[in-house]
Length: 424
Ligand code: EPZ
Image (cartoon, rainbow, N blue to C red; front, side, top):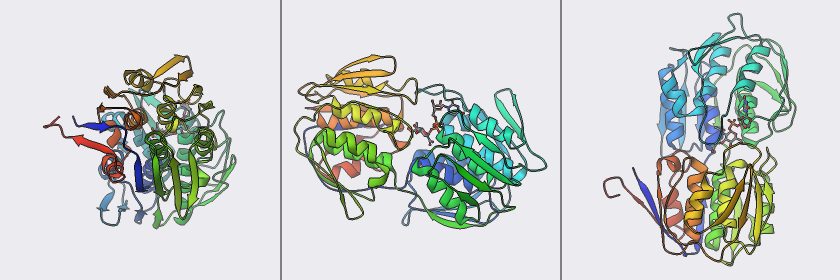
């Protein structure tokens, strides 16, 4: 398995381009199952997860072409060849579960493996299934598979989510666009990826209003057409590099990063003493390589602080001039980076969903590894701030969500390199 070696201490200077958002792209890919015409996605990230989704879509009958030079993915589901998403594919990547709604809406039935839990928490899909039931689908769980049928089509419904779920909001949208009649999603998630999915579906002929707000209204249509859509910039990739610059010190332009998508992070970074300014079509991060001030924050659904940036922000606060308190409210087990950060000398006390990070004067490099994507990249952020060499193992987690991580950082002066398996 590849590893990443980082020698900390070098300030970052230059420009980092921000690519399309993984967590938007995966749902947009699922949307390609809805029309018989091609869906063309621009600004696509090229990640292990998006490739994996393409592989699953191919097995369902979607013709797919990836044009690397223009970062364009063309997906054409002229006919649906299979309505089954097997265990092996859904187990490896939870977002595969999102093919259920589009298949149900287009063909009237689907058999999709339950995703199961993962390292960061149990992550059930009960809200997704309740939404489909409310739209008239028959749902049975047999031998670990969800068997869903709506042979006479889905019908619009008034759905109230008991709490905010990004996945359930998106999945319900992916089905309701082809339902008979109107659907209202109450207490919907407001993440930028939801608005991006709605923009794409509307370009395909759907009639969605209110995406980005708590109430989303969808008028069902009988069919969708092809479209061309640019994937929204990845706010988590942007936020991660912003925190990397804060940790290492330096002055970097994050090209394509959006201020309006990163408000909660920017508030925390400014409170820590980092400069964040809008610069042209991006954000400029300036950090004086001193220790940051401590900051308390808690993760929340958008527009609150994103859980997907919690680990990276914790990495920065490990060297703060005092104690920071971090509460994780979205996932029940998302502090697995804490013991790994401790290997670098961080002082973190975790109790339940709260971590108290007592800043130390310096971190010292060490071999580390993590069990999920954002936790892994937090170790890179910490490694950039640490003295000496940090080796991050299990790099395949990073490859799921960060395209060209080492190249982007190295272009800004970071001492970082991938040790390929044979050399590792
Ligand atoms: C999405 O996961 C993202 N994944 C996650 O990013 C992200 O952390 C999360 O949203 C929150 O922002 C993708 O977009 C592929 P949720 P999702 O439904 O949709 C519970 C990353 O690192 N819940 O908003 O699965 C759930 O267990 C990943 O890129 C139910 O109980 O998140 C969690 O506690 C990790 N029942 C909470 O709701 C349900 O039916 C919020 O989850 C659905 C969710």
